[in-house]
Length: 100
Length: 100
DNA sequence: TTTACATTTGACAATTATTGTCAAGTTAAT
DNA sequence: ATTAACTTGACAATAATTGTCAAATGTAAA
Image (cartoon, rainbow over the protein chains, first blue to last red):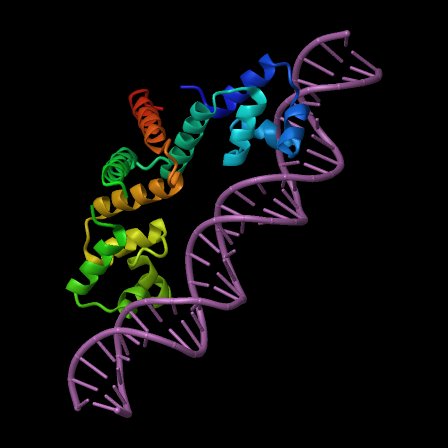
């Protein structure tokens, strides 16, 4: 699956927008956007939703992708990662059914 | 499923250890351990492994529980959470099979 | 009940991580 | 060679995390 940064860069280029154009709208330096696109920095949640608007990307898909990367970053290369994910999933599902 | 803090508190009490005993070994104030046990603060990864040793808890299980809570904290109450978890899982599995 | 000790609470200090700017360095297309 | 876009890295600002401390509260035995 494509990384968040790649998705952003590809769409930005397809729209023929420069880093300068988009970063101005995000109110950050081009340097950061450059780093975000290359995966050297994480965006903030707010930046992701703004980017989806600016670049006309599906907001939900982009957020899901973004969140999944945050999760993976959190568990790093723990080999207990998969098990932790499964436990987290169960907990969420439990919460949902119990409506709490 | 039981929360990390609960597991810790229960085992500490079963072993008749005081906050003061355990927190000294962790080299932190009792206040923090108290908060960790009641879920008011997160422990660090290092504290979790030390706690497993001190309290003779299964290190892997405790870490899995701990990591899953970090994950859940990360996605907060995003309703895209479950989907993000699934994407993360796929990515990890992919990485594992591709050995990279 | 008071004394003694364990735990909790909350204000705030220290430390660490994240997010940002800036200026100089590359790259690529004229 | 010039110019504009992008990248890099040092470092500043900000925000989040992790900690201390002291006072408050709970608990139980004398």
